[in-house]
Length: 270
Ligand SMILES: [Zn+2]
Ligand SMILES: [Zn+2]
Ligand SMILES: [Zn+2]
Image 1 (cartoon, protein in one colour):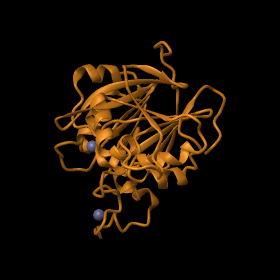
Image 2 (cartoon, helix red, strand yellow):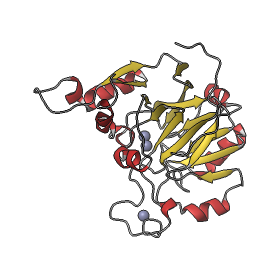
Image 3 (tube, rainbow, N blue to C red):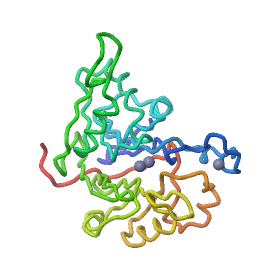
Image 4 (cartoon, rainbow, N blue to C red):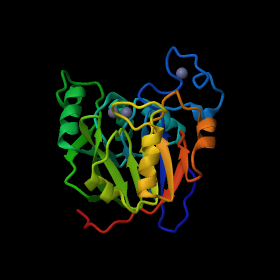
C-alpha cells in the first residue's frame, strides 16, 4: 500500500470493479474479454477503506483472496455488506486468514435481512457439523444507522437494486453506491454534497437491476460531485474507449484505483 499524507485523509482502494461474472467472462472471446489492457480485467465488486492502521472492507467479493493478495491487505478490522448477492459475499470464508493474527472475531455490519442471508448461506460457520476444520470467527451486527467505525463515519443509505432495497454507504465526502437501479429522493438528499461518488454503471444497454451508463451519468449530473467513478462494469465496456467518451469529471474505475477522501462526520461515536 502507498503511504498516506498526514492531512487527515483516508484512502479508498477499488478491490474489484467488475460485474458478477467478472471480466474476462468465462467462455467469451469478445474484444474486451480478450483485451491486453489490465484495466479491462475486472474482479468482482468491492472496495477497501483505510486510514492509518484501520482497514474497513465493503463486501467480500468472490475474488477477495486474489484482491487481498494483490493489495497486500494486512488486516481487516470490520466488514460492511451492501447486500447478499453471491458476487458480494462469497469471499467471506477467506476472512479466516485474519483470525490467525487478530485476537477478536471480525465484526460484520449490515441490514438485518442481509445478516439473516449470511447466516443461511454460511450455515457451517454458525452451526458447525463437527469439531475441527477452520471456520471464520465473525460477529454479525445490525447497523443501527449512521455510526463511527474506527476513523470512519459510516452512513448507510437505502437504494434499490431492482425491487430489492440494499445499502449504499457514505463516508464523509465520499459515497459508494453499487448494485443500484433507483435512488429514492430521500437517499439522493443524503448523497448531496459528496465530493467523490463511486456508482454502478453496468453497460450501455438498460438492465432491470443496474444503472446503465446514461442513467449513471444522469445521477452524476444531479448530484454534481467533483469526480465520479463507475463500477460493477460488464464486459461490454472497453476501459479506454468509454473513458474517451465520458465527461472529464467521470471515469470508469478499475481494479487497484486509489482515491483519497475525508472520512469525517458529525455523528456521535458509539
Ligand atoms: Zn453485484
Ligand atoms: Zn466478453
Ligand atoms: Zn447484486
